[in-house]
Image (cartoon, rainbow, N blue to C red; front, side):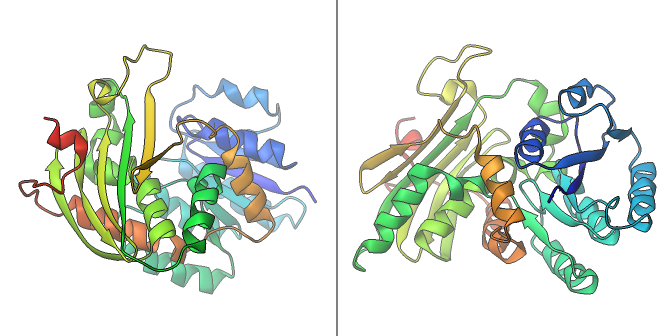
Length: 316
């Protein structure tokens, strides 16, 4: 059965992955909105997508489709807008009778999750989140290995994520803590979710470095002690990046064994969409721990690191 999709933030960086996922799962995009009108990429998917530059007119159009019946209504709203608009656009989707697939982070502040859950109950619709690292083959294999182990001492984990961003980053909404949640929420949220998924609930955390473009600290989990480092600085990469070439490094080391997972992300959004459409997706409760952790990190003052610091800090 083909379903009707609409999308917010279609002119943004992450939207093409969602557009491919909608197409590759056999569904149809019927409406899109973005304050920018440079959205010619829509022609790669359909010539029959209603496009709006104002959310109010987009909202009105979706309500009109809802009243025209099951075959015309929007079944899913994909949310790819800037982080600070996610909860508002999720509410829009629920109000027009659609389920929602929301890019990370679902919200910036954990208390916003409560209202969204109340609205789910009121409308009978669901909000699904994009946790694509949980679908990565190498990370699934790691989780299976960890689950098969007998309980013992906590694992020693080192997590490193560096993704180079130019000066534009600082003057865009992504450089604003109020709009993006800063480095821990904007680029770290998937990795904090990954850590909780692999090693259990958060017991405590410390921050050793708090800068606009890089952060580092430690997290104590049920089954691991984690040293983490996040950065958008190109000079932090372990190789010399070239514009247009590779600019990202992702690595997790468990008890000295490294799993480098910088590759293998091409089709993960499509996997997420298939899971959601088959009722196996992740909802609000799944993201609550990582949203709370990122908020706590963002609001914790940095302390002087000791021997427990991430190797990047020890090497300074």
